Length: 401
Ligand SMILES: *[C@@H]1O[C@H](CO)[C@@H](O)[C@H](O)[C@H]1NC(C)=O
Ligand SMILES: *[C@@H]1O[C@H](CO)[C@@H](O)[C@H](O)[C@H]1NC(C)=O
Image (tube, rainbow, N blue to C red; front, side, top):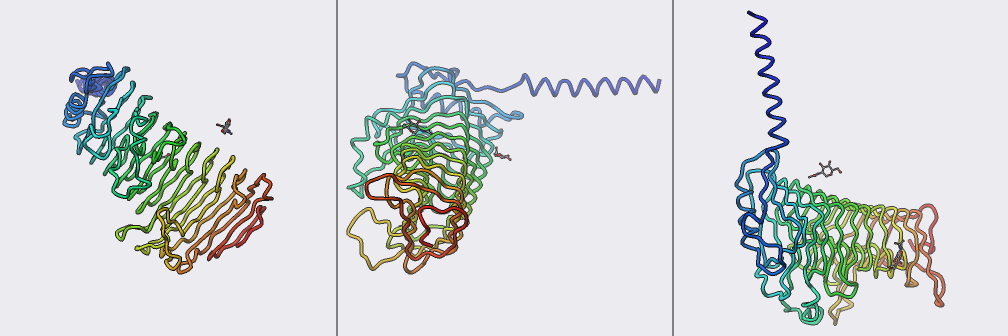
């Protein structure tokens, strides 16, 4: 009798495990946008259908994830916001192409596709975000007109945590491609970004007020910074980037606004810059209002192929003249390491360390930096202003530290 009870219990126990396993494997809850009326014909506006699918997925309590699914096809879409918080972890799978309106003013928000207040989100699927930017680039006058209406960016993540983005391609954004604001603990991998080298303000990945972000294995060719790192970003790890064309990986510009925060803990490693106007750059406005810190940076294992300014600290940034030669940046740059950086510079000045007169750069370290320049104007040179630090290993052009 005892043994019967025992074995019956054991059988129940195994049955329970088996049913849990099958629930995990077979009860994947999938919200296919087609069930909400979406059509991949390249014409129908699918914004409402997508929003409905998202809302139901967000309200669904499922384990371990629920899926929003965009199949193959071309899904035209006006501006959409996918807002949380959600009851489950959501995977947003894009197989096909999302097509933006040609006219920028059809999108009534600053970014075409927005994810906001979501935790444990995964966006992937191998699909394409086509911003159709070529129709609006000629209207972009932000260089000349400070009151210009910014064009919408392709995709934005705001207040998103513990999430990942992989296998997504962004094409021809009207302004920037990916924008991250107030995001933490996020991984970005296998993302491909493409816009022409002369398209205006098409930053690849823009990050502000965010922390614990990892970017690896991304391929970026665009008309502005491949990656732009803005105020309040900390603990950012970037590796395996293929950048070019573009303006390189930039920190800043910083110092324009009073409410800015420091940028700390940046690593850029194992990457290639090919035909970019800059390699790694830190820029702060010549006349800055804030006194923040830029510190604990490591740039290592970087190859430069025909790069304009491979290493560039510019604390005299002033794109809109006239600029007073009596105003100096108050942003303090310190503990910045450049290790194992090699390749070719199209400008004679391959290493530019131009720091502020009133807040000189401290503890800048160059180890094994070899950058050559091939031109009638002679070999590569280095330029230092108001900078303290040290060098080790092989250094060319000769150090000015
Ligand atoms: C990001 O990647 C790291 C290691 O590469 C991993 O430990 C971490 O859990 C990942 N985070 C997310 C949110 O996927
Ligand atoms: C650099 O870019 C040029 C021109 O696009 C290309 O031909 C070349 O293969 C690239 N080099 C590397 C190492 O990626």
